[in-house]
Image (cartoon, rainbow, N blue to C red; front, side, top):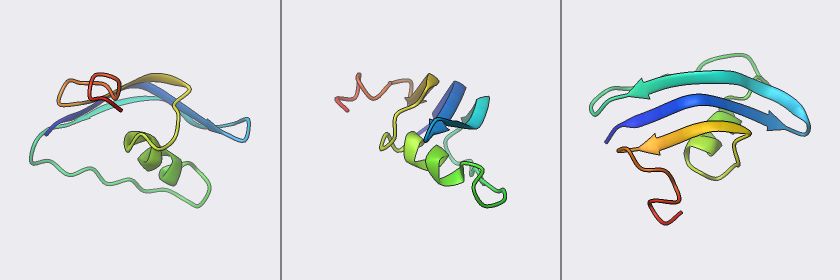
Length: 71
């Protein structure tokens, strides 16, 4: 499976947590998410799992968005 994130921006409680970021994780690769408390790590992971809405950007798993996957 591959994960592609393009220009993703996140907010919570009216506060910007993640500026637009883009990255790819190919099949067999590992992504580490690090940072101090309150910077948006959990919000990012919840967004990647489609449990939180994104403000802007695109998240694809194997080239499909949540709507294309039925989510």
